[in-house]
Length: 506
Image (cartoon, rainbow, N blue to C red):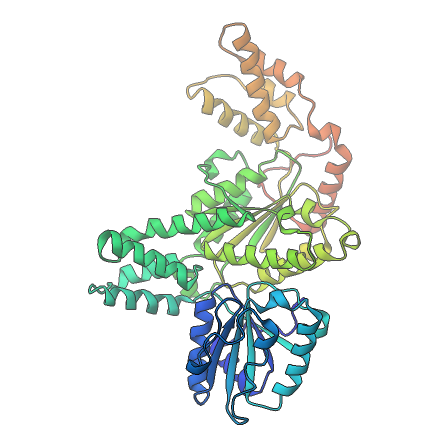
């Protein structure tokens, strides 16, 4: 829990307001320590040349020439660094990594006492830390200010100034491309990328775009929260699902500049519900490839950590890293397993994590398209299915006869581009099969023929189909429940063609 989190409006204005209103202790939540201190320097000047002091455990105090190194390795003494200043002198004291010492009862008590004193003076203590589980005693004393990653204007200004300093200014088109590519990176990472480009070629250019993307991919790999999934799948690799494909093509157009000028908001995402093997994962991969966006896969289980508050922190980090890759597709795989448990068994952690994700989805302004997949709805929380969470919910049902024909033909042509096999009998014998089971039927037929040293044919396909027990028989009750739920108008069919009926699946 982080009380008083502020994220909207002008960040500098919020910072100035909090300092002028004598907020005693600020926690600025960010990994960008240098950027935080630069912003505080600017605020100190704006607010009447307030004194800015900084302290860390190793170097002690800095910012006052005659007191350098004071309180080194002494966190308790660091809290007294403001005492020698004149009573009317406005000041800001930055404590680096100080959250690590707040579990100590003496430090916690001293902070509470200090908070009361600072409310009567133009002085503010600022603690910089990316994550911190606040002790309950400090809830009323500490205000949290979230520092967002640099916006497009800040990145543009930074790149332009670096280019000018190198002696070769950037043209507007290249500057626009690099600004968009660097969106979601910290200021320090942008500087590092620019330094490498200058060392390699002596200038910034379009050639740096690939390196920016690689930097983002490495950041994803380091986090262990998201998995970067390269994909070559296209909508043509999916048999059927015509209504879903048409809907996705419309949403792809909504990411264009023309759509933004038209007034369309950026699409939020889609929830794909259906039994196993109906193409949900393949659809997520095809969306990313056909839209030309990177695909990030989230295993919800990776968000949950053992320490209190750590899961919420990991969720915020996941969101930040996903937005760093924007525009991108975020694939939340098997969301029903991640959020479908009893929240009472984990102290409500899963409910808080889900709430964070849903709030972000509803309020995000970044070009992150969320594709969530679920095998069933009985375990999905009601708030996830509420209108407005996703742009649409689609049911990927078992394929109809025409869709089975299209899927079988697709699988056969992938392996035998010139095949002329008749499919009428096989389509009839595979009623109730999922797309994955149809693919397995083709593979099994090839095994049967290969073992006898010959080419496979229609008879092998029919024989292979007879050996498959489809999920529609082994999990009939779950399938019927899902179909009944969708018929209540809660989800759109992913296919324009007639969906499979209960008698079809028998």
